[in-house]
Image (cartoon, rainbow, N blue to C red; front, side, top):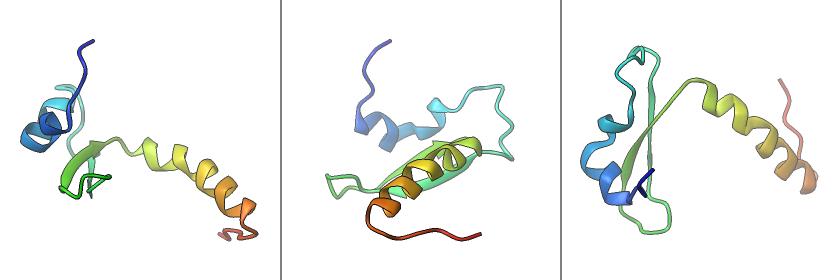
Length: 68
């Protein structure tokens, strides 16, 4: 698999969405990363749920909890 460059996302993020994806489910968010240049990133609805345990662990290490 070839490497993906930030420029690839910046100029055509839609190329990273599978043709079979339900476009009604696709989430997009903007990020500037470390470069400061804003890039729109496509994501599936499952991704934020998978990040939650990582965020909870990081916050717990700081003595902060998430409720709800």
